[in-house]
Length: 108
Length: 112
Image (cartoon, rainbow over all chains, first blue to last red):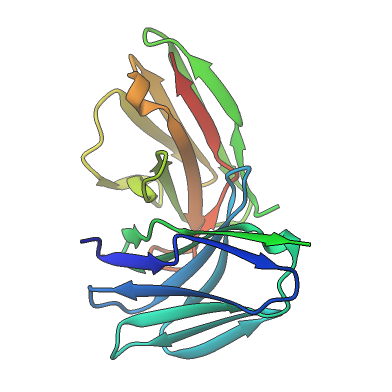
């Protein structure tokens, strides 16, 4: 069993739909990262959060430390949101444990 | 544009070749990282440099040799690689270890 599990692995949506991607982890953490990886390979850091909720544009990330669970929501999804979304938790100062990612495709 | 630039973006090399991947960050960060992403596997940390000193070598084979000549540049020297080393190699940087990391676009490596 991976220490960081994401669901679903693959997700397709129509433009405009509300998207939820889930991340569960089994290690104790100080913060959790959400990353976005586009088909070309580059990765962008979306959020780093340790409690509650953060919002950036149409993206919202929430975390429940007690339940060891985080969600990434995308409101009014758009084809340009198509990417792989990865959650990661710190193992120590330097090492992040990554989930295997959720591949999202948004169709017009 | 994340401020972390990797070259080359694509590299094909034979098993007897010697090549290098280059990473440059323009963010003034003091920590730099090499990650490997193989097909259908999570990202794996390979090396960490903090203030130009290697602080982590995550059990990486010696055919991968990192070099950090200054806080802005990081290299990954490759020699006698195996086909299973084919992967996406991502460089990243952060201001201090454990803070938000910024990734480059990655270098797609194919070993033939």
